[in-house]
Image (cartoon, rainbow, N blue to C red; front, side, top):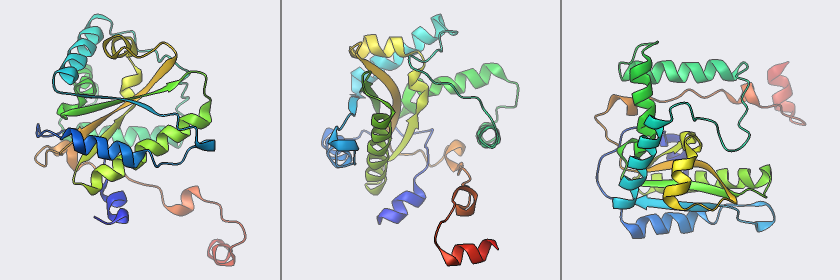
Length: 230
């Protein structure tokens, strides 16, 4: 698969087949992702990979903790989001389309809560990844981890695998920290599902919209761009 094809066809998959992903494949993907850039080469990323019994144990303990502590959703780090426009509309449009595809009507809190809980099953993917970072590092290192994750996801897509980056894993993080023995000196940032997409699940037909270049870019010094906007 060409790089541009991997970029254009990568989507967030929320239903996976149970087909296993070999250890060697995951290791190779991590080696490729490690070539991602980072400020002054600090390489701040840390990854916990779970599969088999380790994955099942994490899923079981996280869901049990969630059932016992449903209100304990506060992130360990500052995660303020004022939900202003245009971001609020984009978020709502995605949620409306996704829940519509799987038949969950607006206001059905029970089924919505159940669907959200599928995050903590890695959407049935056979492999889960949990990303952490040293607390002493600043936001620049968090950007580096984002580039690492994107590199990993594109490398996976090139090999016929699919992924879903999951911010949900920075909620109920206490259970994850205890189960995986994540040091107190590290933040649990997010998770990721890795596996083969289930082509028969309607949720995987969701293709989120993207803003046109003109909607997020200001060109400086290009006569052609100035003429187009005149």
